[in-house]
Image 1 (cartoon, rainbow over the protein chains, first blue to last red):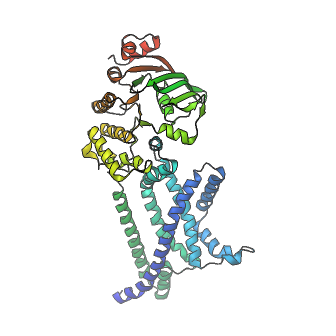
Image 2: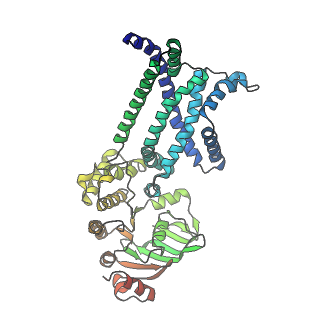
Image 3: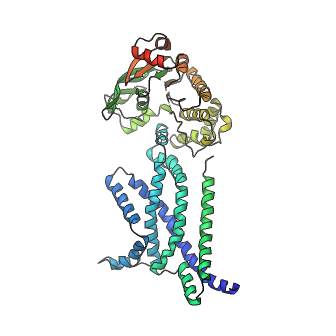
Length: 219
Length: 249
């Protein structure tokens, strides 16, 4: 195994990793706020809103992500009448699938965070004259995110690895280029390189979240 | 002229009557100690004054405005205005753990009253000095002892210049050696003519600082009077039984 060979296979694989990272960043940037929105909806006083959020979370958590991705990429265009307007670039469709799926998980993580906050915090905020909204933004949310941080870290790492599901909808990413190289060269090295690239990405994430946890320790 | 008038307060949780017919008045600058066994409704009564509990009947009048009149609540806006004249100190402090001591004091004045940073800072420094914690302004609550936390909570309540301060068992969650520092701050407030209602198990404090003592049992005010009347010459059997069970003072 020569250095030249490593460089040769790494180049397309790193490009593929670029797609992986793009998907990751888009998915995390959109699914976290969307998830929080679902958390708030699931606690709404309006039964219809809460019911919608609960049903949504149930469906997105209760079916495989692969199925959802296949549905968004290949299923939507088959819908009668509106189908032809729903033909999307497969990467875009995949992003949509990831965002909608991960939002459901983040919604549950944040809900857990909210449940962990003592009701005395709400009471103190109320007695100090804060409105419901002010209390949520200034008192409850910062604490909720702190509690949720380890779970969010966990979910983010899962997301990095789940990007490999792009393979199922034929969007070329890291795993796609890895398999191409393995099949072409009949060599296992690309698998190892792919593993190392995934590990580097998850290491960066792990360190980032460790940093956040330390920063928001409040001690 | 009384600053708080409570008449025929009724409150039930399901079939359990927590407050049966509670009436009392508090004059300006008076310190009221509310004593009684656990489950007697003391905390519920106190919490209903700041709208943390909804009552089912009776009237609460604060600074000449009805929070509740014959079971009917004022509008949300009025409730907010009426309760803004009261500060509350909780048994478990309820400090905001994600904010420093200073942040805890300044959150409400900054967000609710929209005061400038400079004004708020001067006031928070002054109050932290008053409760003896000027050096802790940048510390997070997690770094403080229970007694320090409760003193911060008192300073936080004072930031909004309340006319009335309510204390819900302020020393019950403290280690015995930390009780004194909190009671000293409360005593100082009493000397400064702050109107205070203190739900407490500290009989020494009730006797020494309170102007009047309310003894509650089973959702009723059984007996009310000066500390001397209640502690030295209780008229009701239930008061005597309770006082015999707690440590004599």
